[in-house]
Image (cartoon, rainbow, N blue to C red; front, side, top):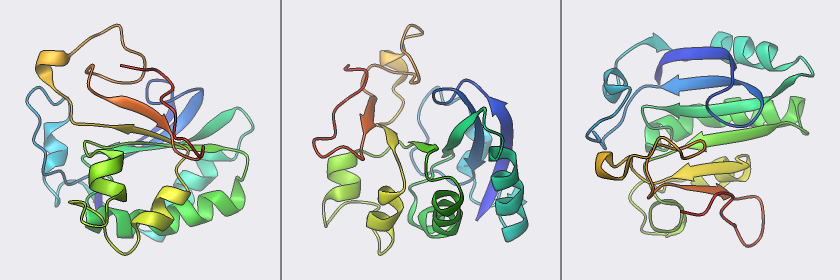
Length: 171
């Protein structure tokens, strides 16, 4: 996997101060995307154990709330497989911190359904490490600057480690 950027001390992509990893590779190609360069799976730098170590080191201070995954598209199957070691190590080192993930796919249809578009052999385990999932493609015609932590009204913020998976900020 490649990644385009790591933002340290990010306050825009989830609650609190976070480290945000922008992965490369996205097949949605949403109209109005703010990060078109990350559509290309070969854009950016190689994601390695050294990258993981750098990310985990940045999350160690107590004032860092957690990690955010976005892109590109973290839930493309090839990206899921590459992100799993990061999330395993994150959870081992920081059991009280949280993981946010932004995806253009939908939780129920694309990730949970056995026939989901991007469901693969690591999806369930990957989801078990994610606390908050912001799902749904960005839709330019539903763009709303007043929304918290999302760009368009169709997107949902789901607390997926809760049994009922409630929306935190209903659409």
